[in-house]
Length: 145
Image (cartoon, rainbow, N blue to C red; front, side):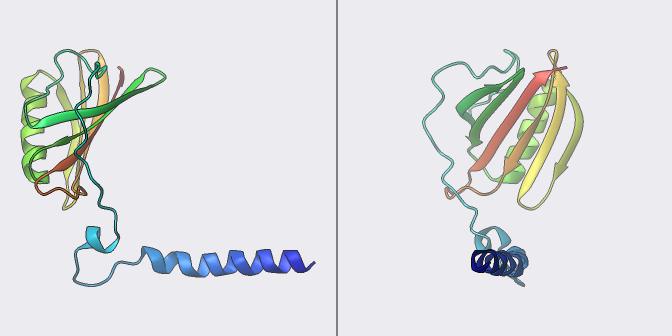
């Protein structure tokens, strides 16, 4: 019975602390307060990304990691500029490559571009959470249309 009481006490304590951990403070930089900044620059991907040949990859974009999850290709990397510039330029590049923009949204610390083209659909997620200045995290998913 005592072990059950200890487990219940631990569970209640965790529940009581959880809402406090998610609360943002007032007036500060939310991304730094919550501590989710990480190094984004890593060595360039040496193999194929798995994205279509006509998928835009301008000089500011560096792919660093690629994986396959079933029919979905997942590619990570970074764009060498701030979030707004990365979002604007990548969106333009996607359209110029003949892809259709299905949805797009830019917020203060992140942006998304959902697309279809070359027999694929997917999303590009951009995050302003890199420790390096003027560097934006890029996460691309691409799956058969």
